[in-house]
Length: 71
Image 1 (cartoon, rainbow, N blue to C red):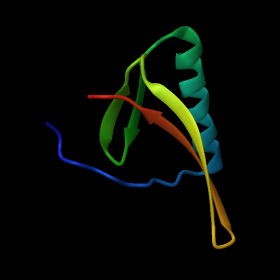
Image 2 (cartoon, one colour):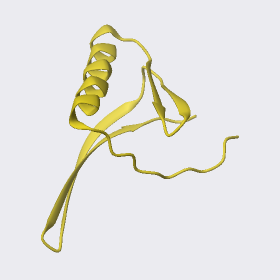
Image 3 (cartoon, rainbow, N blue to C red):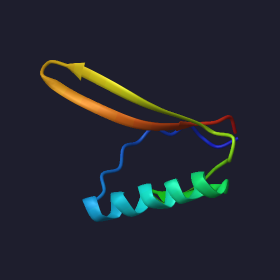
């Protein structure tokens, strides 16, 4: 089993757009999505669950696009 991990990675807008576009292409074609984050290659299975989370606290707002699956 892999060790627990919880990190947040910031990307330039151009890179973020490219990653979202690759994700959308995989979703449309029914293919597994692969991404490397902070040196680790992640494989997202076709059956993953996708959701959008909105948080508001102390005058700050956040939207998270989440992808969840069981390893």
